[in-house]
Image (cartoon, rainbow, N blue to C red):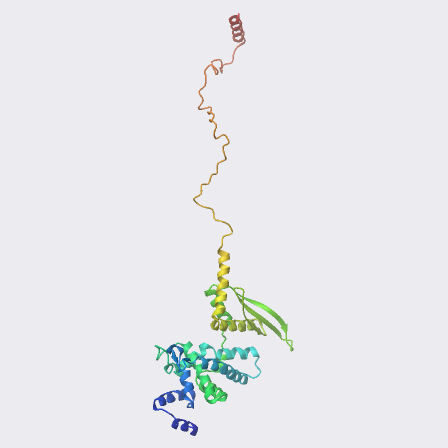
Length: 330
């Protein structure tokens, strides 16, 4: 143990804080100088604590600071570790190292959840809350000991104990697939619009793609391949979906308008109860209908069929009938 650490222990102001100091040492690798920063970092907003002026006391402001410090520190570590690697690779590696999922797992391994003050959750916390607390802890380190201490903390206490940077760097995280999964689950239309294709000063192709969700512009990504640029655009859009509820609301409002137009009928649906008359109109509807041949009552005198015979008449018969007719007229 270093002499400075021994001096810090001697300076502990209250006996009840010694336990917190002792618990933080294996996590930080050093003893805090100003314990108040670390108390705040471990204070979740759910406890609803306020100071004398009525302002809330929680770790959200330290989380904001720690997030920025982590980006800078991890960016420098990745830059130094992978000499000659392109910007896309470095950006992707840094993103995976400081992702909410990674930080949550690290915080859980550290046992940070056991120290976190949260309403109704003294010993168990989800990875999201623990990851936020880890960012807040980095913010506390920065205020307590400065940027170099933050850099050393991440290198020794995190990369040295919990994370293999090379395994993280070369493990492919398909952000495009994750975004596609989210869009399909929520029935949101997703497309990738190519904004630009050019070559850089070395003659290498450069692509720029933008994510479109229900026609709403998402984030852009620029890379040396279509895959890389779409991955970067997807990653940035996923982050925006998480941090901007209004962005999500805009997308779903556009989806509602689109589905409403698709479901709206192009014409009125016929009434199935309406009488359907398929008969031609009868123009003589007020006239008395004529009787058919089968229904008419015929006068026998008009249709005397006695002279109709199927037997062929002889010449003598014809002469006899003529004479009889002439005699009758006389």
